[in-house]
Length: 274
Image 1 (cartoon, rainbow, N blue to C red):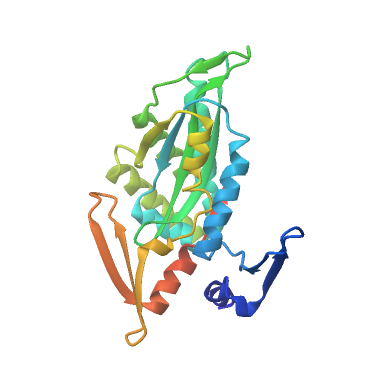
Image 2: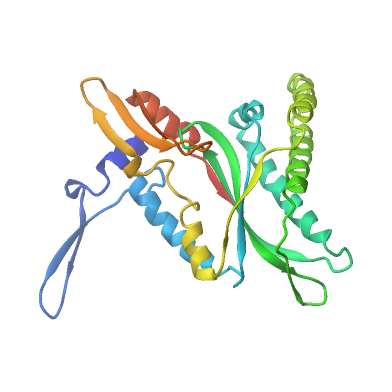
């Protein structure tokens, strides 16, 4: 409730601000205080821009590939019940990328540059943990020379990600009852997802400035932007918002009770970076 109150009152002059004055012309400007919470769509967008700018100085000036690593719906509840398991997503994706570049030339130990960002929400505001990964299209080997890589094997990435994640999760789950149940779901996962977990690539990004601007959309962004919230009905106490469905980009509009809307925001509000 404290964060909700902060978000509602963010930028309200009644809650204070700072007065700035020009020593030359005497012009005064009052700037209201912000809540500085990433739960807030406005402050979250500002946080995202600052993080993207800071990250741009660490990027290699080369082409990058944006890949998204997803998991099956049946596994999502494990990460909701035990948030520590979210670290398994980072470890699994990292191992897949490093192994993929190592296989290019095992004697050279080619190492890429990559950024991993965890999102725990989907467009409908449902619990949907997945990893956004920005990978350099190339790497440096033991000799110090740069090796450009244009081809990424998505079938390999899907199978390798599935295997790595399932093995990590099984090792982390210590409760005997949950472990026995997970082993059954693990076997079903291999049976039902024979092509591995879905991994797909987005556009190739040409230069560092474009990459920095692009990652600003994914790094620390709010769960939902203000532009997607259409209205609030005080009488019915409902919130209406919209999104484009991932499968076919069809516009979907939902109207749900306000407390359900807040519950979705709170449940899915988890972000980590590597």
